[in-house]
Image (cartoon, rainbow, N blue to C red; front, side, top):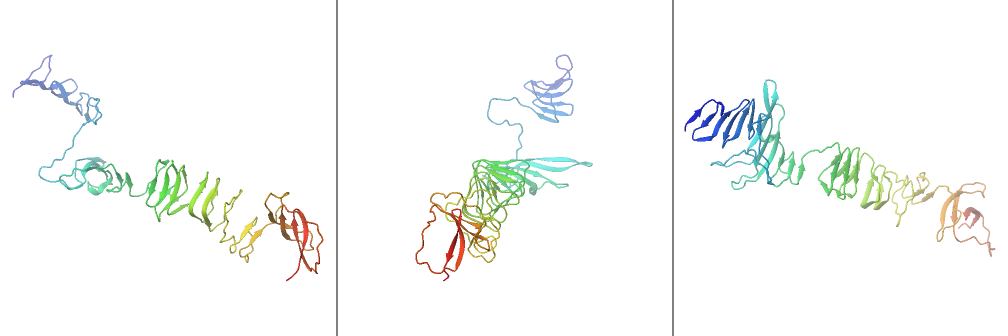
Length: 380
């Protein structure tokens, strides 16, 4: 193959293949290009090298014109071929990155595509990301994240079992939004807000959903087979339904309804507004005694057992249809006044003489429909 070189106006300083004049080395004022078919394929301009461009703007600049094809455009190929030696799991082409250090540079990380299976006929591959601390060298245990051949992402693990598997803690300064159901195998620690759409927050058996200083906001359900605990406030704006027992060691504040099959707590269950109980109210514990209820008072006597203690109140002016009101009020009819029973009924007191009444030596008073009466007692 013969080459001609010449100088002149047509091609100054060019080196041309005599047998193929479209293949040449082209010297221009600011760059040198290697051409085939008359088109520049590789250009050196200053300290930059360009492939497909005569104006490289980086140390290595690859350029290719766009097409209407929906496929990705191959700009570079890294190939490790099987030429009699089978590749191992974890082996594959990669790019190593070195970062500056005093007097030179040191290994910083790798991006690679590696084999997932040892079988020679299986080319399943994963993309892996390695990072390194100071003075570390390239090793397989530098891997921090991978995307498997099936599209699963693992952070801190080489064997992700879900679309995203994280081995370690997850934290964020903004909002975590989940459109569907989210399942946690262990503890979820939240310092900010967690909001979910119409999905469900579900914890597996024996695990917990823990809130440190933030809250959970969900348009759907929050369900757990384990414990729901937090150091902040559990606030429910709308109705709250519990399928089983709610165990509360602190305070619970709700602006909406609390509906549950069982409610128990080691502290006080305090209702600021009206409380409606659709069925029976069963009390097995008490405020300071055994299985008693205090209305308007927390000072139920310690010796009371299964008693209803009512603080002094105000009788209604009129009876409610098909109801009676029972309460407590100070007596004014006895020498030693004190709280006595009040009744407000639809049935009025009858002023009728009694027949054959014996000697009655004891009496108490009772308020009936706003009037205090003596109630005479015959001791047994």
